[in-house]
Image (cartoon, rainbow, N blue to C red; front, side):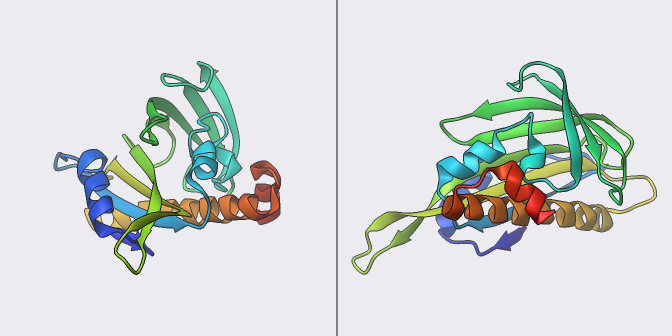
Length: 198
């Protein structure tokens, strides 16, 4: 597991057990990343749930086109990747969305990159802190947890596959944090911030 500024280990463990525990066949690997974001959950969720606009914080994506659906569950999107990414195109399906529990799941159904049968689950929850009297209080921070499963290429191994995938997702998480935190303080739209960040 990879953690970035994790707090509230009990809450994180519950979320991980509920949504991020995967049974894997021998040809797949999995990992979990955690990111604390200094922005309120509704704002962060408004970015994460946009299946039709992942480029609002994912800088490896140059464009997104919906091939079917309206952006809701069951929709299919085609992503064109920026130069330097290990692949040019990825076709993905929106598998699950829960606006109450803040859970989003998508999977790769076709691609020219090596991340075959990739499936991502991301959950968000509000950060909580205890005051001097042991009482929990909500903060304006959000904890994002993302887990994935992916095939291990024939010419690779579990460790190398996870390392490459983790690095890409870690970059996405940092970009998500940057965009959300700047939106929270400036009110500028995510796409405008993303252009500046790029």
